[in-house]
Amino acid sequence: MPFPFNLPTTSSISFTDFFSSSTHPSLPLCATTARGVVRDALKKHKRLPPSSQASNLPTVHSVLSEYIPYLFALDAGLSGTHCAGEEIDLVLVKELEVEWRATLAASLPGREPPRIKLKSLESELFFALSTLAYAHSLQARAHLHTLYNATLPTPEQRANAIGASMRSFLEANAIHTYLVNRAGQWNTQPVAVDITIPLLGALAELTMAEATLITVLKDDPYPAVVLEDRNKQSKDWMFKGVEIPKVRAHLFARLCLAASEHASKAQAMLGRSVKVHESLVKYVDDLRRTAKGKACRFLGIDAELAGKTGEAIAWLRGATKELGFAAMGAEEEKKASGLSKLKKEWQVKREDRKIEKGEGWGTDAGKFEEGRVVDMLLQKWVKMNDTMGVQLIPPSEPLLAGMPSGREYHAAKLFVTPALDEDSIVRMRAPPDPGDAAFKGDEEDSGDEEERGIAPVGAFPGTKAEYPGGSGYY
Image (cartoon, rainbow, N blue to C red):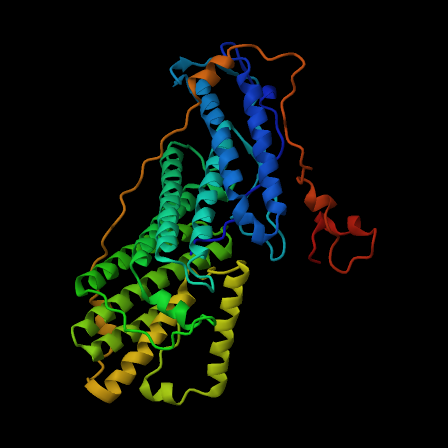
C-alpha cells in the first residue's frame, strides 16, 4: 500500500528570461511551453476530488515525460555535452529562479507547506523528476486498490494489478536512486527538504521495500481469504484451508525480511532530517513493522506445515508484537471484554469504509490488514491446538532473535536519461517567430495563497491583515 503522495505545484516562469542559445534559439521557448503545460496539469490535479485523482495520473505522467527531456537538453547545453548527437550552445543570462511547493516538508496541522524559492536548473530538474517518481508510486497505489475492493478481482485482474504496480515501484526507485547519485556531486544541500540526499535516499529504499512486498503479495492467498470473509455478497461460508508449500513459505519470510531491512534504512535516513512531514515518518515505521510481521507469519506457516503448531502460534504472537498490537495469552484472549471487541469491530468497519471510498486507505502501510490475517490464523491454530494437538507454546522472543537473513528479489533498475528526438532538436535550430509567445499556463497562480487565502479562524471579516503573517493560529 504505497504512501499517498501529494503532487507539488509550481510557479510560472519563462526560460527565455534566463537562457539564450545561438545554435538552438527556440529551445528556451519550447521548454517554457512544455513547463506551462506541466504547471497547469499539476494545479488541475490538485483541485480534483481525491476520488478522481487516480484516473488523472496518466495525464500528469504524460506531460512530465514530455517536459523532462527539455530540462536535460538545457542541462546538456550548460554542461557542454551532446543531446541527440548535437552540441547545444547555451548561455546563462541570469540565474534561474523557480518556486515549488515542498509537499514532504513538515508543516503546521491544517496548513499546506509554503512554496520555496529555489535557484539553478538543477533544482528544477530534481523537483520535476521527483514529481514523476511520486506519480509512479500513486499509479501503483491505484492498481493495488483493486485488490482490496469489496468485490474480489479475478485471478487475471489480480495478476495484472500486481504486475503493473511492481513496474511502477521499480520506475520510481530508479528515479530516486538516480537523483541520490546525482546529488552526491553537490557542494551544499538545497533549502527544500524534498530534494535533499537523506530524503531521496529514504524514498529509494522505501520504493524498493514496497516492490519487494508486492512480490510476496502476488502469491500470498491469505489477504484474499480475509477479504472474502468480510465480503457481504459472498455466500461461501466454508472454504478449504489454504496450503502453501514449505519452501515457498520460508522464501516469502526471507523476502519480507529484506523489505523490512530496506524500510529500516529509510527510517534511519529520515532520522537525519527533522523537517520531514510526520505522516511519511510514521508510514515508513508502519511499513517496517508490516514487513517484519509478515515474515513472522510466514515462518509460523512454515512451522505449522511441519506439524509444529505450538511454535507456529508463538510466531504469530511474535508477529502481533512486531506489528505493534497488544499480544494476549490464551487466558487473556478468553477474558477479553466486550468493549475491546466492540472497539476492534469499529476499527475494522472504519478501514473498510476507507477502502470503499478510496480515500485515506492504506496510510498504515497495510499494518492493520496484516493484523487481520494474523488474527484469523491465530484463532484457527489456537483452537486446533486446544482440541487436537495440545502442544506447548514456546515464548516468541527467542524465535524473533533467531530469524533468518533477508533475501533480495529485485535488482535496482537503472534510470535512462530521456532525450529529445532528433526531429525536435532540428526544429529548434530555427529562431522563434517574433509573434510567438510561450505558453505559461492558464491556471491561476497560487503563490500568494498564504496572503490572500482564507482568513484566520474566528477572525472578523475584513480584519485578516491585522493578524501577523496571515497565520491561522493565534
